[in-house]
Image 1 (cartoon, protein in one colour):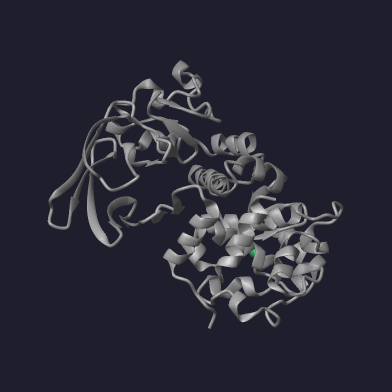
Image 2 (cartoon, rainbow, N blue to C red):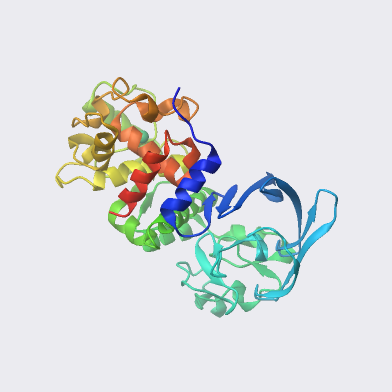
Length: 390
Ligand SMILES: [Zn+2]
């Protein structure tokens, strides 16, 4: 049995490494010094949370801002009202959550993270320009720092890209097209996105990019975007239409044993093309595949991608663990040599990371960002943080 740490222990370890204050695992856990919060959802609705074991229920205003928190007895423990731009208007007690104005998370500096951008309620503005001009006919849309078309009373902006009228539900938000997102992915993150994409699938992809940006920023003193430009350069995400299936099959014949003909997995080639086998992958799948891109780009031999020729970050991680990195990644089974306390649990994607050094690295890349408690042990997390700071 691999030695496992509890989720809290891993978070505490991360806090020590990070020294940056609050640590998050998606929208589900937060840890600060002395406070550990777990959130509960019903569908997309955040309904309750537990702070150091004490359960609270939250109630929202018409903009989904957390307004009232009650304890299990129904006693109000906190009430917070916001001015039209999200600044605090009235505070009583404590609402016991960092999810505040329009249900977005407020970081310690008082800024809100709107999935794609940071919003400052003191000035009623985003602190980064929007990458998308959502509605060219509306002059307010050209002010790329404006929040909610300067009409925050009725507007919310959950994507950070487009204002929608809270009184009309979220229908307006859905009018943003796949090509808007694809253009933003190109201009903001320098990724190419090819093939047929739905607005929802392309939106999930840009959310994934923003998530990676945020996750790496949190351990590199804000260098997420710069890290992505260097290490995820050339990433091309190709929806698996007919041509990418054919390419994948051709690749199989070039590559030989180790893959199954007929089955077209999500995969990355040496040119950093990511072929996905259906529209709308999970965030975790995208991040795993992008881990292979980062590995490829870390190779010292520029003429040959690391997955094929070795010499990149996955080799370094393998050496750290004490196993032979040995060149051609996909052909070298590491599972026989992997020390017990560095083995992936079978419960984590069927132990997928135990197969080759490149898969080990891609899984470590994914779970460092998404859920450190799933990593084989904390030293893998610590290694990844050092790697992100290289
Ligand atoms: Zn993989």
